[in-house]
Image (cartoon, rainbow, N blue to C red):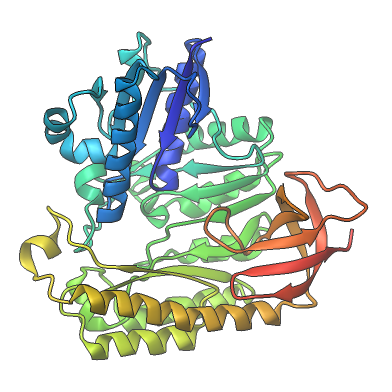
Length: 430
């Protein structure tokens, strides 16, 4: 069987696209390997990210590495897909003609057709690139919000929900393959259903996913805070399968910055939402991201953000410096007037604050008994996660290898025995 190496860059939404494409290529008789440096895969597909500068550079570097391998005779055919080629396909064809073809993020069929297959747009099949006990479930494509800094609507288009029955079919297929944990993702999960059903349907979807036999954890990512549906909070509070975890990117808290970012909510509304979440779900772990150095961010704006983070004591926090992206409101209408050194300082300062908060939060968990899932064995430890930790982005729980063998993808009960800023240590209870 001829091998195809599928290399995925960027977010988990890209990963899902790669897995759908890989399933159709596998159905054509190809053997799929993911993110491999092996030289026996003579066809390479690179799924690129084009969101921010660093991600674009990583995509370009990966393409050039593959071009060098092709020129050396190590691979025969090279295809580039995804967000970078959606934005810059014509430029890339001119500058890197060694690539056999470029296909955008909205054309999952291109590679399949280029290799002689017929793309099945109705298929929910996936070739998982994750460990088989967890998977991402992408419930919609695109976004309607048009935040001032974000290029995604220009790349991925308007919000398009995946029909609910198709998502349930996909979830059932994943569960039958051994998946126990689903990460529900989209550019904005809370907007799910508006285009298909005329109203937000995320709560109903979550309830139906809870009924899928074999799925034990459901985790919600990328929830836009504006007009956050109360019924989603209610279903999270009552359904035991839904992890007490929410990824809700707030980006900033200064009303001045929120307005310039076109975030469509105020500081008061963000705080009110956080209070609602924590009242309904007292043990919820909240992950958020902040964007610093956006145009006109003053020292006062940043101080306000720091104080907000100190007050809210988020369980997980990512911080990113602003980078100007062509085609966005901020690139066209605002001046990138915060010096790079100031951006970098603000990232470091906010992460310093969060590191102390994370250490305090983790120390508070010492002695707690928690249910965890095993992801892997690493040296002298089994690496696990609780319902409060999403794979690949959050902290891990390390369990010393002892007399009892633990199995990947199985659940165990542990007691937390130690902590540092971003990891925990535990002993097996049963």
